[in-house]
Structures are given as structure tokens and as C-alpha cells.
Length: 331
Image (cartoon, rainbow, N blue to C red; front, side, top):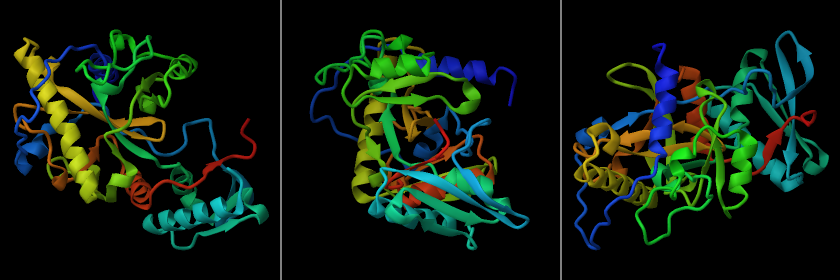
């Protein structure tokens, strides 16, 4: 990673959130799907994936038993109920199996207040990674990021993120939460861990949700051989992804027509897991003027280890945990 990567990444996020007025298209304009090769080439991640394990200095588990060959980790279940805890345990078992941790055991306390995972000591980091809630959402980035005004663009106007969205980046978490409190349904998200401790506020519904994803699998980029995660959509998910990326590509074309440079014209969509941005790809509208075909799926790439890719694929394929898992000792 070059020494200027993080400043460049931050500038890209800031630029992607800048206000842009875009010319509206006439209704009924024919929508073309780009060829698969063009769609693949058009997808370039500008913000890469953060590590799935818990951030340094924090822990989502309490070790209640340690031994030479393993440990038991217990988590608080919220909301605490026997039904929610049992369903959460079922998803955790599926995630552990998908990660290849076959000798793990998941149990639930009486009343469902806590959940315990017994696994080999060598799998502790994997277990921690798999306890994420795992809600996945794709947002049209420029249309969703909110500025200090806290209001998205009116539904009948093609304006990205309100009149002052360009100052949407660089927030502290309390600042972002205060801004989000003014907008019903707003979602506070953070930049990847290595990119700095700053936050964004996204408004509106995502273009694609975890319900639109059929499965995910770890793989490797055929050109760079780096680990990636391949996503396959359901039928409705294919339609939703295609429609969202068509809007992104057309907005880029409109910006170019209005005089923006090639770099500034490209528009983005964001992939978010829970409260973290994992990728903000741009669409090269010249190569994919009709957006990306949902039938070709999508991919998450950049900065992943093989273990990260396996864990992310397991989380996405099994779907979100029905309840949140957190440490009983966390304030």
C-alpha cells in the first residue's frame, strides 16, 4: 500500500459526497445492460474492506473457560428471549460450519439472556468475526449521503444528498448521530478502520438489502489473485442492483455532459455491513453506460485476507443474526 493511499482514499470519500446537480432524464428512456466483460471492468473499489475482527482494544466476548485446546466465549443476547437466542444460535452454527469450524458448539442459557460458543483456541478470532449482526445494504452513495442540513434531496429532484452534502465527511460519531437524529430512518456508518475514525450519515432506503442476496462465496481475483467475495443476487435482487447501477451510471454521463472531468464524473454506490462501509465502487459509465447487470452478481474486493473473505462470505450467505451479540461486561 503506497504512503499516500489513506489521504487519497479520504479525498475520494469527500469528493463522492460533494453536491452535484444532475440533469433529469426523460421517462421511458430505454435502458441497456452492459456486456459482462464491460460490467466487470467497470467495477473498481475506491474504498476497500476493513478487517472483520473486532477493533484493537475492544472485545465482543468474555472468556468463561480457558484450556490448552480451546475456550468458551459467552455473549449477551439483545433482545433477551429464548426464541431470539435459539434462532441466533442456529445462524451462528451455520456460520461456523461455513468457516470450516466443525468442532465448535453453540449453546443458549435458560431464558435466552446469553449465548456461548465453545471452539478451539485457534478459532477465537474467527468466532469473534462471525458474531457481527451481518445486515448488508447497497446505497447509491451520492444520493444517500447527508450534509449538515440533515435532509436528503426531494424525491422529484436529481440532487445528491442535499445542498451541503460536500461537508458530510469527517464527522465524529456523536456529530453523525446528532445529524441522523433529525432524519427518520437515517443510518450512521463509519469509514473502514484503517482509513481513520470518521463517520457519515446515509438517508433513504438502500437500493439492495441482504434479502436480495442469494449467496456469497470466497474467491480470488483472476488478475491479481487477491482474495475477494463474490455475491449472487436473488431474482428481485438482480433487478434492484441493475436499476440502482443504471441510475449511478447515467448520473455520471450527465455530469460529464455538463463539463465534469472524467474522474469527477464517475459516480459511486456503497456496500455497507451493519454500521461499516466496506466498499465504495465507482461505475465507469463510458464502459457500462447502462449500469451493471445484476445477473452477473457483484464482488467485494481490496484489503481482504483469505480468512476475511471466508468470514464475510459466511456472514452474507447465512443472513443477519436475529439478535445482537455483545459482551456482558461492555458498558
